[in-house]
Image 1 (cartoon, rainbow, N blue to C red):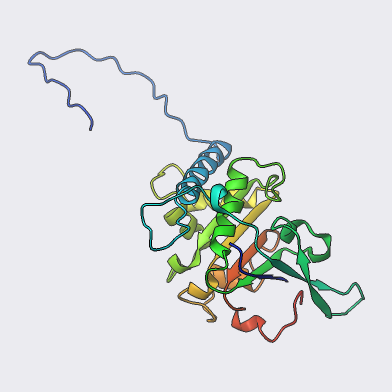
Image 2 (image 1 turned 60 degrees about the vertical axis):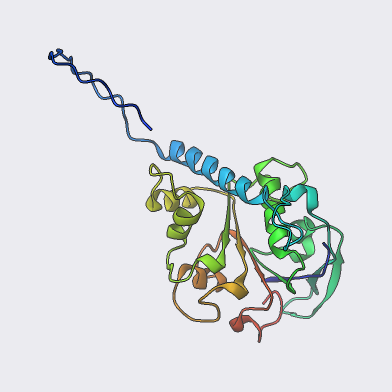
Length: 249
């Protein structure tokens, strides 16, 4: 588990009914069941549409409601530090080192991990950072560490109270109006992907934080679920079960 410390920076028309009956020839049904690959394409389209709606309405000044911008126009690189573990067998010692770009959170070879925690005070830009990463993925930004991701899942943890299943959460909040893709499809799609990136934003706002509920989020944080996926958690403080553990443990 790698720790990242973030510092301040920035109708349909009704047909006319005829009195005469018209003979109708039955046609064979052309509606076939969608393949999983077709459902994956629908999932990706819906995800990108949802993320676009979010990253295009960034409010840099909270009390000015009519000033909304695309995240790429307002995102400013802040000061970011990563905990660099000493390359000594069985050692958990290390120190905080300055990272020159937010991309290095995911690309610096010294902090390779499938679990990352980005910690920062309120207003330091943690949510804005997740939106910038979503923008980069949706628009195929070459420098993005998420460029090669088959799927990017970005969830706001404050919405997930009493939602035990991560697949239900994805369905509810990322593609609620798409009936062709079910929760079971989402699970099958993700399990069939080679590279899945997951961003869980705002652990400190998660209604079930610091509780052992057995929910998917709880299991993901404990590295009991999505073990092969890269998961990044943003929070104002470390999850309770991790506070007694050293970085990268």
